[in-house]
Amino acid sequence: MEEQLNILLLEDEQEQNLLVKSCLKQAFHDNHRYDKVTSLITGVEKIKLENYDLVLLDYKSTGKDGIEFVNHVINELKIMVPIIFLSDENNREADLKAMESGAQDFLLKQELTPYSIEMAIRYSLKHKKAEEHIQYLAYHDALTGLPNKNLLIDRLERTLIRFSRHQRHSALLFLDLDSFKIINDSLGHSVGDNLLIEVSKRLSSILKETASVARPGGDEFIILLPEISKKKEDAALKAQQIADEIIHTLSLPFKLGDHLLHIGLSIGASLFSGKNTTCADTVLKHADTAMYEAKAAGRNTIKFFQDEMEKTVKYKLALENDLRQAIPKKQFELYYQPQVCVNSGNVLGAEALVRWIHPEKGLISPLDFIPSAEQSGLIHPLGALIFRTACEQLHSFPKIPRISVNISAKQFHAPNFVETIEQIIKDTNISPDRLELELTESAMLADIEETASKMNELKSMGFTFALDDFGTGYSSLTYLKQLPFDVLKIDRSFIANIMEDPEHAGIATAVISLGKALDLHVVGEGVETEDHLHFLKRQGAHSAQGYYISRPVPADQFIAWHTQRMTG
Image (cartoon, rainbow, N blue to C red; front, side, top):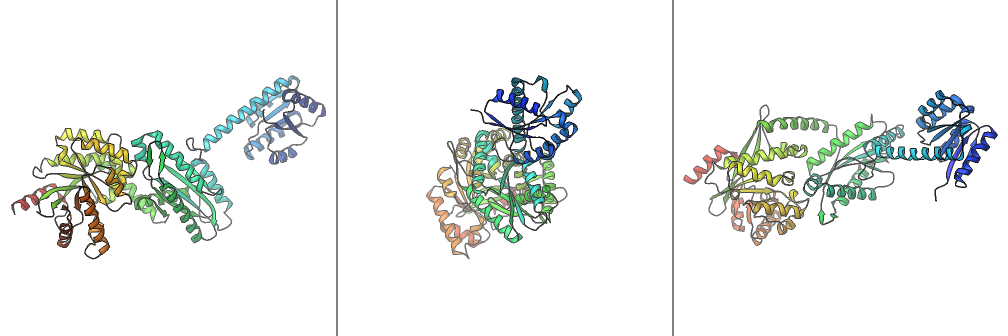
């Protein structure tokens, strides 16, 4: 059964009122009700108070005022109620003006029948429903159903206006999912879309009704926390608490079909009040800027906007522009740091480390430009260039058993990664068994099964794998048990303090024992003293790498160092 129609009739002639009433009765029987008013002022007040499905408006009694009435209700009050004019005269000019003002139809009273009024009303209601759907699409994300950026900015502007007369503080949180692109690229858009839907559900479930969560696009979400405290310090504390809850909630695994997925996120926060903020775009920009600072600081981090961040953003944008030009110009050089046997001192291999030789700024550390390359997507062409260069230079190292090359998480999970590596091997005529691919824990976070499959495919070609920076992540042991690694590298942070800190010495000893138990080759990174080397030897590590042995040096110096070591 259809819902009862709620109709407002503006008509001051009793005879015409009876005609309309009769047509409505025959068309909709008892499935309608209507209120009758005789003045436009009363009509406006009724529309503000009542939720009418339709307004029937007599043109003869209202004329130009009726046109202004429609404009006021629809364009100023933003009440999207269908309005139909009823007229005694066939006035084309009036018809056009009525339709231009926003009316749905213009009916002649002498042609009014139960059928004609029913068709006009049903068409108007259908048209209204279509407009509401279009309006919804314009202000909501089609995938998750959350408000989109347009609706968020509208709500943010309303918040700024509402609180412009006092100092109550609000907060805007800008969320970016750290591992989403890896998941989307490796497992497909369907899995990625389902993950975004589940993320939106979790966010909505933990936020209060006063908060607004929106998805502007991609793997980003924005949360508006209006009027959370009078004091800025208290507002910051509450925003931090909510952000911590969000991080905890989204850190729990997502079960999507056969996949158990883990994601991290970076959160940028901007505090604002009506008196100290110029516009919604400024608040949004500040939160976005803080989010990039959080991303640079590491996964599951929140950063609040500070004025000095804008300088950092400008620097990073300039760096990214330079990096974009540097790749085709090949402004990069590989430095090599040897790895030696802790017992014999023989050179077992070397790690290839990239340096950017900027034409104006000189040598730039990878700590400065690799994060920019990953965030911008330039890591794919840059990573391919680094790997190709290492393969080409391997021909100059005939007596070096193996070279290890770092592979970023985004690079590893690119759909064409294996094909790219395979093509470079063919182009450079290098045997894969002379190459070791170093992965960090973040490369495994997206999907262990997919990671294992790709690693096994590359191992079947002859490549070996090293797990870098072991001990810095909470689930490295899981990866070691499920993934086909050959080498385990102890993070330098543990080696640095083994002589002074018993806890670090204990961790390093445990890692070496674990590696040996799993039949892995254990490498100690960050060896800077003879004591470090002796410690690794005593505990049973296989090889060492660090400044005590050699700093990273260009290819020609590495060859000279190796020659001298063999002859000296």
